[in-house]
Length: 207
Image 1 (cartoon, rainbow, N blue to C red):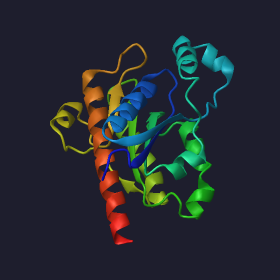
Image 2 (cartoon, rainbow, N blue to C red):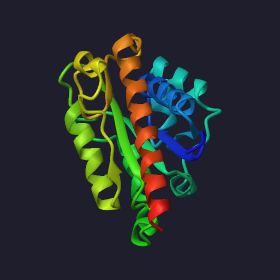
Image 3 (tube, rainbow, N blue to C red):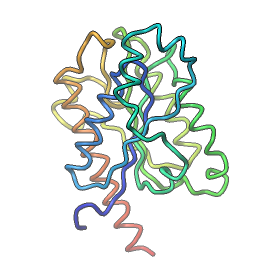
């Protein structure tokens, strides 16, 4: 199939910027791999006072203000959706979950099925709930009837990164996204694009 014949939506929530950086890395790698990409952030639910009280949170909000908010249309447009969330008590953030909960109408119509899905995350501490967060996120994918493409241990960089469920990073805004996470983001994006192209071509040939 020719380049740029699949659509990838990278939809994320980020408070202090780590997930926002990973989202950009995945979006750039997916575009480089031959996809049309929409980078979207979900709506913030926290009160402005809480954001203003945290300098890193306020800085990320200002730095990403030009990124469009995710809408249901982005899900319809996409052949693949890569979802990003920091871990909150080993689970998905309320902001990303709220966006997913708005998609009930599309789910009932079957319009979220047969798309590729994948996820990425970050936590402030090692073993801080990264795997459980991605597994919780993937519950929604199963309900959608989506096709889950996790990175697995399919590339040598994954044996360094160590997370087969999706790209992850340990550390807050004071800990820059490291080379391992950057490499993992590239591998995951390329794998998503590769299999989205194959699935889309196969479905088209079968129809």
